[in-house]
Image (cartoon, rainbow, N blue to C red; front, side, top):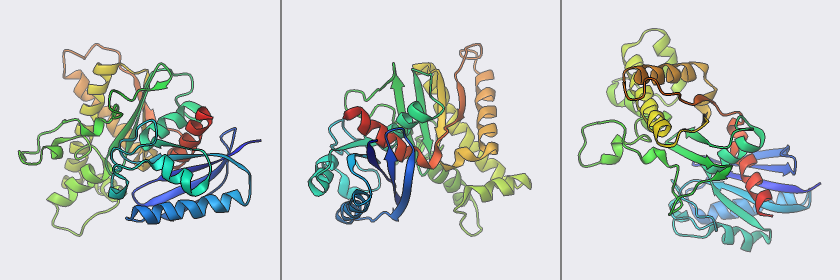
Length: 301
């Protein structure tokens, strides 16, 4: 049996797991993500050392934020500014002496669903991660499609709404309107005179009580997300669209999103009669980054 280390570097935590060649997570843990790149690398070195003491490690797979090139070069690093312009693969290999692959976090989630999740049997699909912002992994003919500069699938940068801010056009993007934090929570808090809400579940609870602002916030959020998904449908015609991120476990979220997609589709004569892919939750949720990173490492070996 071969063993791998999966590392999922997020803005808040680094999730890590010892994974066997069948995709089973034998052991997992997490540590807080530092804002300093050097501290993150030191934490990774400690994690790897611990797992190495338990099992012989064949390779390390890393899921990381930002635009990641196939060779492990970080064009951007999401919220981790120290990762911009470094080769993360080489940095980790230098510290651990173990062959490493690095993949964009949304691509890793797409790989995970292909291996062990709800994309089994599909050859062309999109995996969208709805969280602080929006990330996405695009699979075409069973392969991740990276595009000419490694940033294909980044629908979060797509303009979908008009928030009347000509100086900061990124505020019109899917990430700033259709994401859980930058979209839903930000909209609610921006228009509320009450204490800041940091958990989307609070907005759903208020909406159940017919709170006007909560209902308005959800409608804004669903509209932005549905517009982005409809644009994806007509541009790429995937077989299925999988939604990951913590909010995807909420059945109210999925029902609301599906209803909004159907509503917008019915009001557009160009797409009204087209067959769209099913939109459903991803299966692996919080383990997707670990499992997808390992799957990528297995493919590379």
